Image (cartoon, rainbow, N blue to C red; front, side):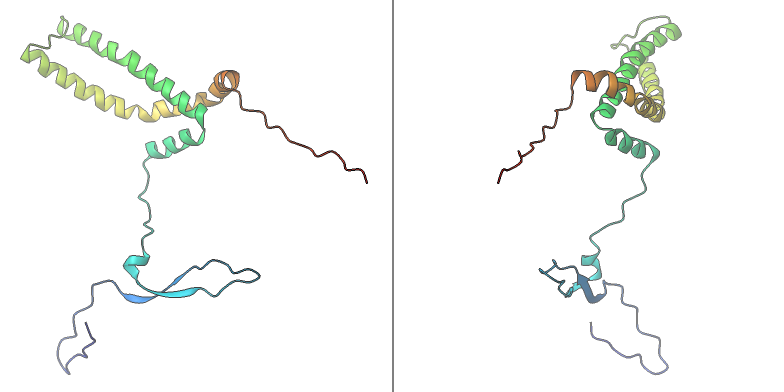
Length: 169
């Protein structure tokens, strides 16, 4: 919309709320033996702001980045801890149900289904709460996994460097 000056003594014009149009400098590739001056492109601030600042990561996400950064040994270590957690915790939950109710779960009984749903809800919250613990255990055992599993069973390929023989003149 074109600029309209305010009327004397009247209210100020409404503020513009859309994206501001202004020249935005864009990087251009270097030219051999010198740099070319950056080009000026007509873009809106909204278009130029495609690079969005990432949201703050949770502690779990930060720890998972460390697991991935540890490479295959970190991922294997985490997978083994997860496997151990779920392999151990599901039978514990089933036996805990039996000890509390005095009988094995009957999936056909509505009352047992309600009890199982309550136990599953509590267990899933515990499992989510224990994720940082499992990641920490994985990070702590990554060096051992690397040394005793990865290096032993999946050795890195040796790099062979070729050396040119000296030339006789």
